[in-house]
Image 1 (cartoon, rainbow, N blue to C red):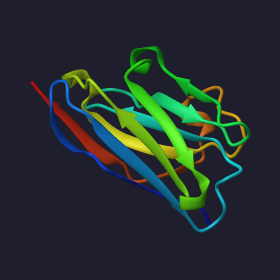
Image 2 (image 1 turned 120 degrees about the vertical axis):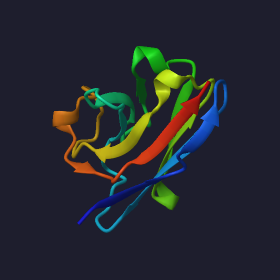
Image 3 (image 1 turned 45 degrees about the horizontal axis):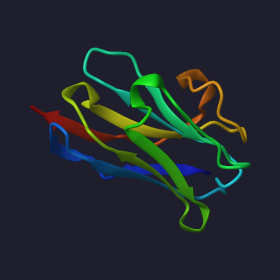
Length: 125
């Protein structure tokens, strides 16, 4: 079965950067759209970004546009999320997930069927 594992989270100061990685194993994932989600304390899990399996089309939620960059390397079975100019509002557990389809939209939790365990991102001020 497909498994996903996130890494790269940690503690960063206001304005700093991190790059998260999502590595897949088991069943192939190169034909699947992969999304990033996050969940802050007391908040619902929300979509962050997604990359398709067909043409590499990327999608971002408005608050992440211009700061976050999603990419994938199918040879390494890895999807990345580069995060820049971080603020305390970005503090959350970040998850990657596979949709089960080739395209991303909509980036909503209910449409993604396989999840990693999450990696903590904490932004201090």
